[in-house]
Image 1 (cartoon, rainbow, N blue to C red):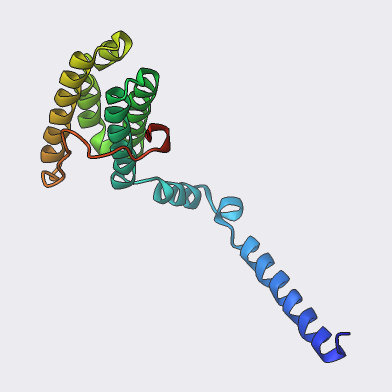
Image 2 (tube, rainbow, N blue to C red):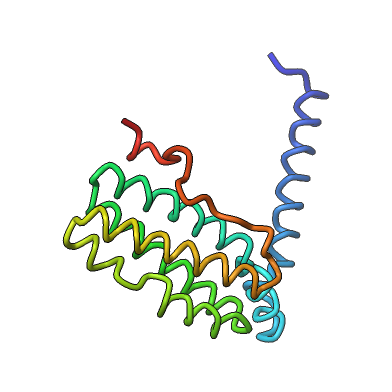
Length: 162
């Protein structure tokens, strides 16, 4: 059985926790902040280009391996997700929107048709053109040191493990 002094300690700890959590709620900018503060916090919470490019890189790798394995529906999905991530980057970083749109217009040229036709040769030509456009965009953005492999070394998604 718990002694009275131990019980008092637990009660104090529980009350302190409740008080701390209510204080945290009192300072919640999402509920209590001004519109300007809410906007500032939301802008800061948006993913930066580096975070989005990690997603794009994963999709790049998955796209390559899906096509190489003949998983054309999955390849189409990866291409669409890659394009979606780039469009989100244009929203979160409007200064890059024109370059992103240029890449979207030129970087995926012929890829959708190659995927729909399930044509390996056309797909890999298109993939190499996309990779070249990636490298141009990296160089134009001051990140020429970020180089993409023409053939990613291995799948990084369990859906592509064989």
